[in-house]
Image 1 (tube, rainbow, N blue to C red):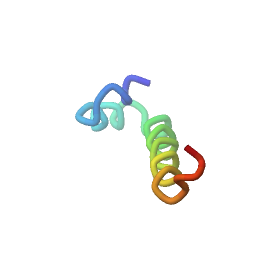
Image 2: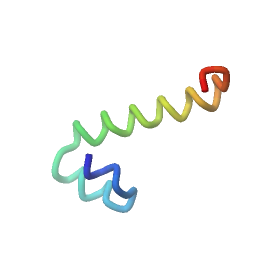
Image 3: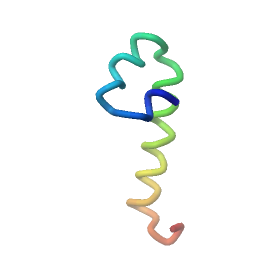
Image 4: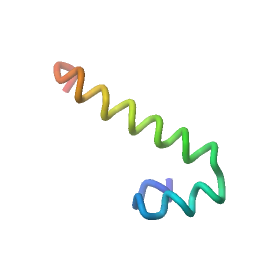
Length: 42
């Protein structure tokens, strides 16, 4: 959750725990792609 506070902290979070950081990024990325390619789901 701390990684979400700022992108500049992403590097620090990656050093601590890679798995949670990647999972969090994947979730946000999926949501972003969903909005971009599926505006109907607003």
